[in-house]
Length: 171
Image 1: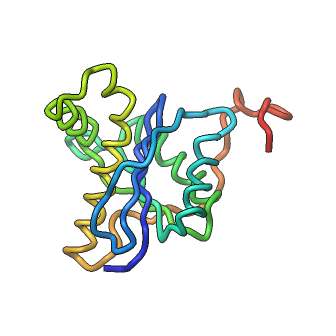
Image 2: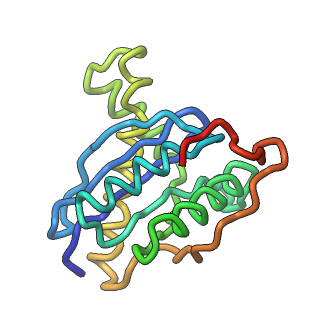
Image 3: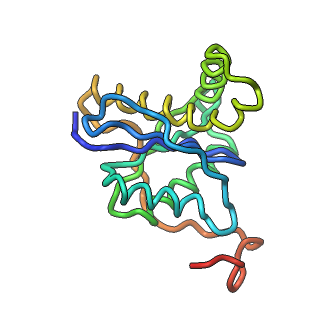
């Protein structure tokens, strides 16, 4: 097992959940939930800050596949997100790991812990990020190899509707 802190990321259409491991790569714990910022990528900026603050070894992003293993539109969106993030935080590697059913499991775990429906929405992305990261840690522990698929860090082309001169974002 490589020593070092990892960040786990659960990318949703509205929110992004973050989790972090301990330096030994044993246990994943929740960090925070970020609002998804499609126009200015403020959520990715917050992840980049966390990478620097925690001196992160790598970032693990959950890839939503269907039960059959196929990748649909959500997976394409996450791949683009991970590619953009990889370019932003280079040379820190970004890896994609299968996240089938993690959000469902996160909802179930929170419900079983007595967290109400309204409160659950605020933390379910963090809980899913914990499950994604813990799966990656466990996979590396059992195989001795870094988990998932390494993401190449090139900036994906933004949709024309989001490409404006200033875009209303501070850079």
